Length: 83
Image (cartoon, rainbow, N blue to C red; front, side):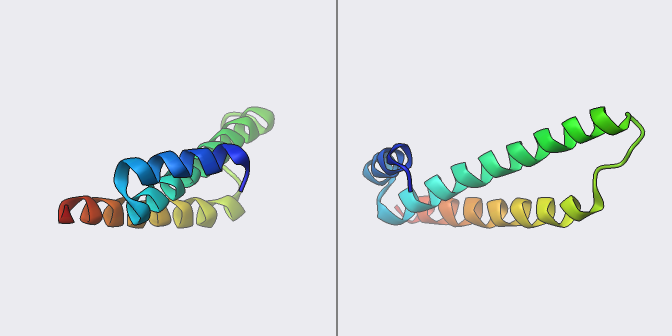
């Protein structure tokens, strides 16, 4: 983990508690990964022409990231509700 992430993790843990802080950092990381993947898909379409579909090997990755993000969000909301 880079120093920037360590600082963010400490901030999240201070604000939300240990477990919720961990989940918040994971949620940020998943959001960053999904954003990077979507940017790649946009550039791929621009290079291949507007009518080209995104590469089929990236569709499952997109689903896995979205599902993981949903689970983290659900867990974070449940933890928040216990307080």
